[in-house]
Amino acid sequence: VFALIVFACLVGEGYTNLPSNPQLFCIFNHNEDACRYGIGIGILAFLACVFFFMVDIYFPQISNTTDRKYLVLADLGFSGLWTFLWFIGFCFLTNQWSWTQAADVHFGADSARAAITFSFFSIFSW
Image 1 (cartoon, rainbow, N blue to C red):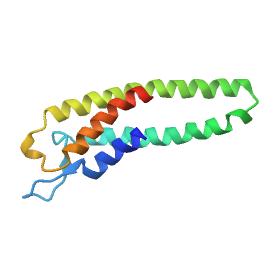
Image 2 (spheres, rainbow, N blue to C red):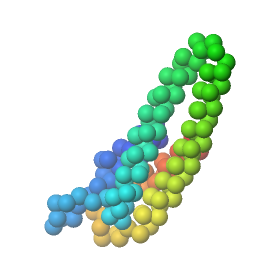
Image 3 (cartoon, rainbow, N blue to C red):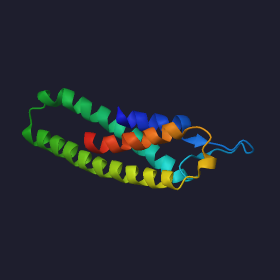
């Protein structure tokens, strides 16, 4: 759920433009990589959650203990990696938001703060 919130905040209001220029730019200090990183880990986290949820559904039907062990280790390893990536995302988005000029933010500040907040919450949920 947190990954979807981060993704939706960045896609919905993460890009803005100046009234005099129709070109969109990322709300996080005009750094396109900040928006791309948040969107990327949000999408991949959601897809991974769907995959591991399906694995959890079929887990009791897997009789081979070696396969079960590898699935559990893959889940644990992926969760550890994604915890680290969410931490990096939180730090990156927070840093870029702190360097953002207030004059550049006409709307979308709440979405940017929500993306940062739910990136932080995702660290603990993973």
